[in-house]
Length: 477
Image 1 (cartoon, rainbow, N blue to C red):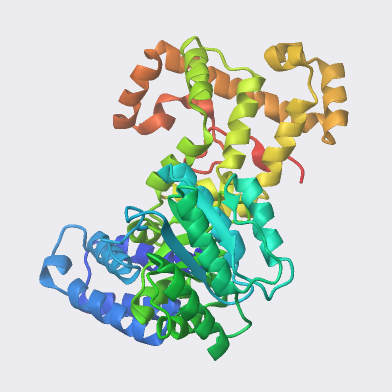
Image 2: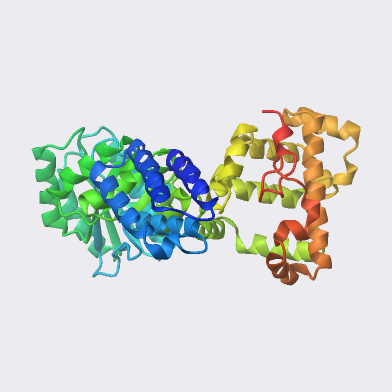
């Protein structure tokens, strides 16, 4: 997300950081480029004007221009202002501590992803907050809309209100609230009907449902790919319905980011969640400071750690830690690591969340390294026998040809995978010599992990920070 904007801003700030001193004209020239970048990203003009004015006023102060690292100071100011533009650090979360059932009403236009987002949010509430949820579809206009929510409910393990054919939205809402009370449900999510555009009938229906359900949260679901149209839709709804927040869908495909950067300023409503993919677990709580970090290429390590915690099973991590402590690391362990990387979003997602990895991510794209390579490596390991996975040294020339044929690759690919495993295994043994996992922490203060683990090799074609995946660019696509 925000790739094009991030690339443009990255170029501007790289030039600022590279200068030992800055003049007022240097700052103004840089802000002119930032202004163009924001406008090209489809950010609303009033938002751009205010942003550039605030940053310029702070950046041309003498304490900045005379500081030891003026370029870094300017980037810090831009980061703080971006965070404020996106909603600030005091971003309100989801209100779930009210008297149950807490009603959350989902509103938006048809095609914005409202029904899928309702299911994603129900799953989020169940898993992250431990609340009992119930979903109800009030969409009687779109064919099979109620059935769609029922199917999604089964997939996310959240109950849905039984469908009564012919019942109207207000009556469904009344029945849903009563059912939630009888079943001791903590949170009731109402998936309301949409239209192709905002009209009086839609708004009248929203108001009637709200009068019955008395929602604690009314979340507007908008498609971030529609840019300023998304902001205009939000303004239309905000003028008619008492919105408490916005959910931006398809953020993973939004390279520009205009909707996200304009939404809070134009509508006055906070962005509470972002849809980051088609899978039902691809929903993130929107954190302005973390998003600002991603835009400026500073990474988002906190989100990366949270994603890892949700993907990596504790017992698997403990088992691998014990094996690492003994200097053991076979192809089964490597396969587990590759699958976890895929579940966490793949190489591109991980690179985008790590500080300073923007250039590495671009180099990966240029050299043809993508998530299909992770799947191909998994196929190679899957074509081996259990004995070969446990003891890679068994793989002679004949066995390698069999594995290559079985995985649809060639012997060179098999050799590269085995080399990667050997280097990672060597690194595990080095960790053991340095005192095991407890001694690993000392590495980060003395030249970083790469300096202490030369066995990891040059990595992804020499990409910084990607030393644990050598040889990937050479694998055929």
